[in-house]
Image 1 (cartoon, rainbow, N blue to C red):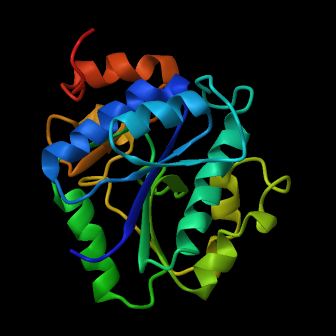
Image 2: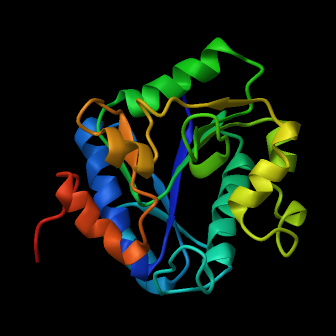
Length: 230
């Protein structure tokens, strides 16, 4: 497997979802241990105690943020900030996944490496937000090649206080990068998965298209909840 850094972003309000995502990752591989970027001291300590590498972000928030609600846009930008930090460490690639991702197959990771290795011109791999003819890049599952273009692209000076959220920025500036968009069949967004789950065998599932407080029950409905019941 290629050498890359793996990260996810969380806070104490998002801790259970993040833990579930990490548990799903452990089920498919023991080789990847992400660094957890935290927005509060409580989550930092919790993930430290679980023996994860942790890093504290400058932006502080402890509550769960729902789509388009207060602080949501600022929180999404922290993903780009964390990616930029990792790029400065000069690993060849940075893999960032949201806490509402559930891993189902090792191909969820190895295919990203293969795609990058087969096309040295690629800068970024990501999901499609929609399906069919409508196209918008989704920023919840990003595999980034480390080069000068991506270091510049993810530099916080380009987007902090300038764009409404991370996905808007990436889509607005996507012409600056060479991008591969993943198939919904193997890398489905939530809407595609909910509508087609009986006919596909995905490598991962992004449980978006549902509000934050509903994600746990949605994952349980599809047998994608891996934490023990308390």
